[in-house]
Length: 136
Length: 100
Image (cartoon, rainbow over all chains, first blue to last red; front, top):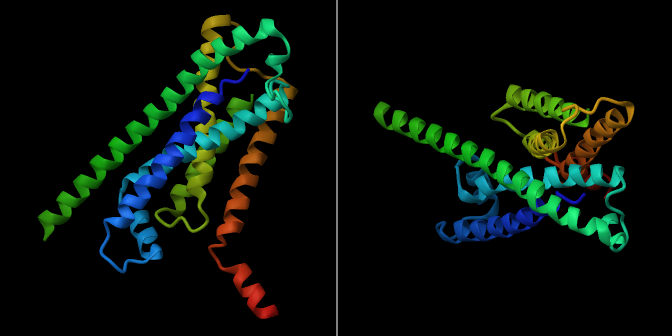
């Protein structure tokens, strides 16, 4: 009914967190580093802003396509109150329950998959760095 | 069916991205994330519905197929808009400069 609202809320929080991480990383660079240099650096290094960017894209991508599915099934409309379940008081309870159970499960599952992805990428990156140091 | 179509789109996009990786000039990784995000969310939705209500795991009918195709087109459209806005080949710059 409106399960995508939970991942959407998470996506908003992650977008803010990504921007904060990006600013911190930019401030931590030596003076005179341009934004283009920073972008190039963040494309090759596993920075937190890059990792959060992955989660951000996963969440916003899912929210967008699920939003279309809900629109297709007439569960949401582009005018207030946006959620068709709100027209009938009897539908509000089941809608909230679906948001809580399905929406939260979706957000948790996507975050878990992202967590595994980050762990794997970090391990691989560390192994490559160790190998490069051994070769030198 | 929309779950299967989106999962298929995610797999195909990931293969194309991997073939060209590490270069990602056209931001194919973003398209991968868009499709994978939706696939993971629909997977959870299908599992919960199957456990709670039973019935068929995959909804296979014309409506679900049309929805799947529309969803894939929306993903492509969003990626295309982002690509044109970023303009990695500098096409718009060159066009505007040649006219000016």
